[in-house]
Length: 471
Image 1: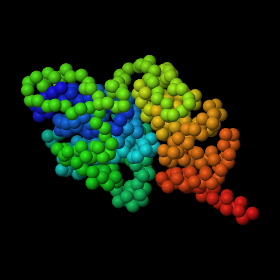
Image 2: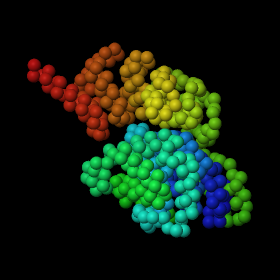
Image 3: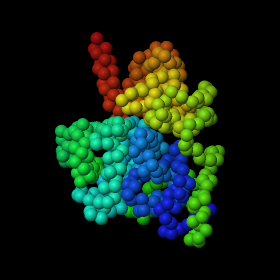
């Protein structure tokens, strides 16, 4: 298939072609973070990567749903998937003042995101403007665009910042809290936040929002600039015309289609407008990419066992979810067989935090069902989560199966699974003889990966053993 040369395309044509390349949520992908005011500069770069076959997630419809309740959940779920290997931020004057961009940056490094990743998401910056890291007012030529943007925000949020969207407000406050908690005391002092809290910064955002766009955008700019300083990402800058193939392949961004042939003839425009999804490369028998769900579905995916004796469970619909909630958004991918979404949905059922608007009531049997579906596909954190529930919770207890899953996850060096399995060996009981030496070894492995609870548990165990030896 041949397509039109990017330099000859309109913005609408580029967006239409990019929609023809849906990302694969089950394979390594890059998340694109950008200001939608920069579409004319961002689309050509991203489309070039997509035409090269790379697996890219880019939100092309922010203005259609950016103020609706589902945007934050969609963004959080996309970043939380283990297959998300890299966030590419298109830094510019506009991005520096983008509230949505700030929320994405905070989510990339939030505890909720990093807890679900084997490795933290990398962050690269494409520098669109040399002065993208500078604070300041809005030039006169940009005032109409920013005035229009702020008026839309006011119509959406109301007089108070995020006043009509608690989900956005909660996500922002949690992200700010995780950001501050992740800084060293020296970094906090250097950035001017030695005693600041998320609540204090939120009050400043509220005040700037009430004072109008001339205060709001500069304050957002200051937060974005300080986020980048705190992350020390200067070595990750990319030129818009750089060859990213080595970087993408180094960090695990998958090629999910053959490169597209480019032609400058007039027919190319028609081809791009009518193109269907390209054929996928051979992925071990998978002939097509998973469909990205647009509405409710009653699909029961085939779940591939991970060398277990249990048969894969069929996945029923979960009808009791609150429409537009995190769980309902996540369920759409889960029923299509996405193991990261299945694991995340299991967590929603396990904890069912009303404050976070997960959208479901606590249901441990459903939690086990979804964890098992992901675990049977080899999802390591789901194996850990499933083992923990089956060992500890009376309602679903099955300690024999719990040990099987915890052993699998621990063998794959999941630190939490090593901690939980160490707890099991320290406790002992049915199906397992107490073995404090094995418990201590597991705690050491988890502690070596930076898990503080494991180090604490190891210290307590060693003190107890030392006391026993003395007597």
